[in-house]
Image (cartoon, rainbow, N blue to C red; front, side):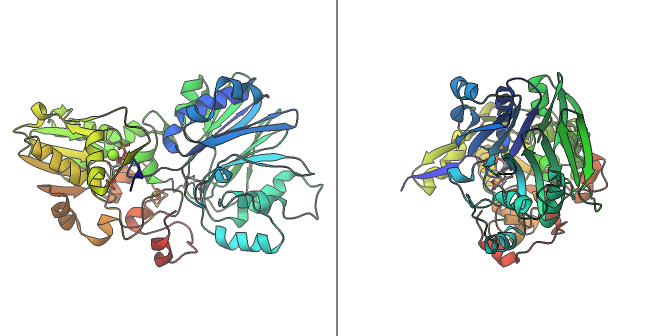
Length: 470
Ligand SMILES: O=P(O)(O)OC[C@H]1O[C@H](OP(=O)(O)OP(=O)(O)O)[C@H](O)[C@@H]1O
Ligand SMILES: NC(=O)CC[C@H](N)C(=O)O
Ligand code: SF4
Ligand SMILES: [Mg+2]
């Protein structure tokens, strides 16, 4: 049977982008979303607002597949928000593609979310029992119903309802909420997901990652803080805390794997973080070898750091085919194995007769490492020493990253020696959690998928999590 195979082993979260007070906001949002495309390739959407008139276009696929010039031209106005989606809750389907748009007699509004709400099942039941009719199966829609659930105080400013609603949801989020006159940018109190604000001409832009600012020529202003709502309107920026409990537990996988190397997250450049993590990986786990090879693309910065610290030459021992799309069709498991060969090839003349240090950013199921070790050996490498720039991944993520279930995580069942045997390497070492903190010069980071110490309550047993696909 033909099956659709994703080309990435680890799946990212969504990306959100917003523009306030700049003509043709939707076109700018298109370019912003294009810069965030790596965060989600399943669907994309933009909602624009023009004098209280909201217009929306959304669809399955990449930003370039969903929009064209003619479509963008219909999204008039100087305000817009957009979203690129990778599903973490509620399944696929066009009804789950964001931004969501809600029509209400107190004023229409649109909403876009990156993250995952861990108490969504409970809240959904509560809201449905109160009469809510959901348009989608996405966890994100819950926030809108929470904002509108209280009809007794219709005249109070909307921000009060937003504060109350944000305090009812538990989990990870970067939310953009757009009304006729303003955009609210909100981040969860644990600081799990990134969200930054930039200046563009007389207006403002908000983005999951700062790489989108550079694309538009916008200037970084500041990050939205954990537990904060930044209101953007004609008066400029205003800040309000919806929670006094604040942590700085940014998702470490943003630095390790997800974010683009040219993004700065909470003041630390992603490429710089990875490079230092590679240096620390060498200090913790040196290897007797001839060359250092990174697994394209996400581990290249860490591999450079490892090579620099070790004094070994950094070589391009693996090449990635740029034209392997987001997904490709494979007929069977056997050909699926060949799928990675379509994606990555060893450079025979570079690795032949060499002892190779192979640096990757992470091991999830172990598929990539196993295939690449075999490939390097088949190409003539005499030894392959695998060095991973993150700790063993032993727990699933509940916060918007599809890191797999317990059953699939190779390190949940095998110690590093067992994983080493399984992938056929000559040695295997992982980076320590402490080194991750040092790489970012931080006191806190979410490392729950490595340590099992989740910053929030989970509302789900490990068994349920294990059964859940996404
Ligand atoms: O142990 P596994 O289950 O194989 O997963 C780990 C691999 O997945 C990711 O790469 P991915 O192929 O997703 O994309 P990349 O090209 O961006 O590195 C990550 O960088 C590892 O290489
Ligand atoms: N990856 C994400 O951030 C997903 C957002 C939301 N939970 C969804 O599944 O659509
Ligand atoms: S559990 Fe892992 S992937 Fe999930 S938010 Fe924490 S660090 Fe990121
Ligand atoms: Mg990879």
